[in-house]
Image 1 (cartoon, rainbow, N blue to C red):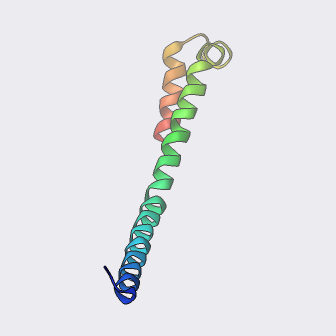
Image 2 (spheres, helix red, strand yellow; image 1 turned 60 degrees about the vertical axis):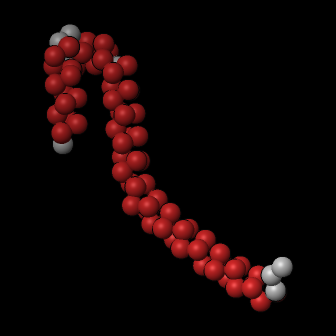
Image 3 (cartoon, rainbow, N blue to C red; image 1 turned 45 degrees about the vertical axis):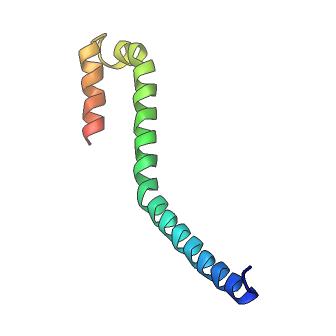
Length: 78
């Protein structure tokens, strides 16, 4: 049987541990969120560009698939 003071000490330690874990998780989210968002947007752009390849090649690159994907690679590298 624990005394009430022992229970309070455990709760205080547990509360500090939870705060430390949450601070660490928040730091990870703040660090990784821009990377994840940039990756998601880049894959979205790749999907949209891939689905519009025929239209882009017909309207902008004289039906050249190589020219179309070269244009995408230039925008990807910049």
